[in-house]
Amino acid sequence: MRNTITTHINGRDITLSDVPPDRMALDWMRAEGLTSVKEGCGEGDCGACTIALGIPAGDHLEWRAVASCLLFLPMLDGRAVLSAEGLASPAGTPHPVQQAMAERSGTQCGFCSPGITMSLFALSRRTERDEESVLDALAGNLCRCTGYRPILEAAGTLPLSVPTESETALAGRLAGLSATPLFYSYGGRSYYAPTDLAEALAYRAAHPEAWVIAGGTDMGLAITKRDQHPDSVLSLARVGELTRLTRHAGGLTIGAAVPYTDILAAVRDRNPALARLLRRVGATQIRNQGTFGGNLGTASPIGDSLPALIALGATIDLVAPDGVRSVAAETFVTGYRQTRLAPDELVGAVHLPDPPPGARFYAYKIAKRQDQDISTLSASFLISVENGMVTGFTAAFGGAADRPIRARSLEKALMGRPWTLDSIREAGAALADDISPRSDVRGSARYRTELASGLLARLWHETRTAGGIPATLDMV
Ligand SMILES: Cc1cc2nc3c(=O)[nH]c(=O)nc-3n(C[C@H](O)[C@H](O)[C@H](O)COP(=O)(O)OP(=O)(O)OC[C@H]3O[C@@H](n4cnc5c(N)ncnc54)[C@H](O)[C@@H]3O)c2cc1C
Ligand code: FES
Ligand code: FES
Image (cartoon, rainbow, N blue to C red; front, side):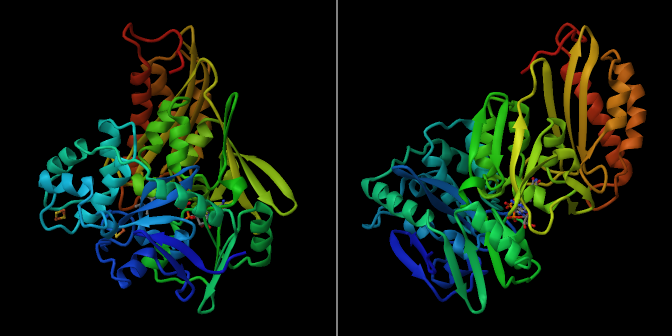
């Protein structure tokens, strides 16, 4: 067990033993003079604080853009870190990403530029780049003055950055560190990052007051926005069993601490509609950290994962020191911000089935913006139609009640009916029995009710083939 934070920042090994564990990486880096890392919002929204985190992956580092304002300092342990200060060569030659930003006039006041440059650096490590991945890379970075055209042009000219020999050696060293548990404490506060599930569960049982974090994108806000400070933190981010994603015939088993970025890559071919939905969770920086376990742990009525998991018939493993129980996704949240988790339990994994043959999955998220915004309302549907009749239909909504819900009355009203707009209109009345939306800053109850019916109609329109009403829906 190690008790110091060991990291490698901008080419230098750093060991820390005298900083509180609930200090955010942003604050610490700025205090150390790395002032290219800017603070804009302090809540993961603007990208000004973006740094690149190098995660050991075999013979290289996988560089990911993350929001340092939501990164607990011990999350740097076993990782390499790059900020804009570390991009240029030791002789001072600008990195190709910096060069591209300068040549294309991608900066004016410059406040956003270091964060954007780090997002572009992470992008420059990717061999496969298309327009969508470029837009994705920049969606979490706000620029108030340049306008995005020159920045996108800079992104379009980036050469591929390749790992160097020294990076390979560093990756090996950091992998060794990451495989060892960390128990770091300073100033009466502690941070425990075990690598083994049994140890995580034993700690949770012995320290029920400890904050549990995975990506920390939600819990980080409690520090930066609500000024709360935990005495102890249990990090699940490197627990082997929780960070595993397994593919098998019929679906995926996704460890609770697997970041969205990896989930997205795994579902892209198997379930493109789910991939499109997950692509709309936060922006790249949030998806590089955030997890299903954290999304379920918040039990938010507008969390994006649960409606999709319900419609797809997923099950969720709840793990405790004395064993595992599996619950249907639709029963996991029991009330406003309430779950079935017992005090000594953690979410272990999500078993995500592929849509069965003949069924099609559709997922919609209505928010004020395309990227980096939480849902006003979301809906997920799994539907089968044979000979023009509905033979299978599962519907789930987020933002339509005090918790994500399965719309059983709607399902009943559509099952066995012809798949026509008339059936949709009639069944839409049953939806009123399922949903009870609230009014809040994102939308009134009435608006949400209209949206729910509207999404049902949209589903019908989207299932139509060129020839009109489909006899059978083929899987896409
Ligand atoms: C800028 C920004 C944009 C966002 N956009 C979206 C969005 O579009 N859609 C959306 O749904 N959410 C969004 N979120 C919210 C958040 O990112 C997600 O809910 C994410 O999935 C949380 O995962 P995490 O691992 O970071 O959670 P953490 O912050 O680590 O944890 C969140 C909660 O879950 C608990 N928890 C974590 N792991 C487990 C586990 N294995 N077992 C039991 N409890 C656990 C924690 O104790 C805590 O209560 C956004 C957040 C930010 C800051
Ligand atoms: S300061 Fe805005 S995302 Fe971190
Ligand atoms: S150059 Fe001013 S915010 Fe982007």
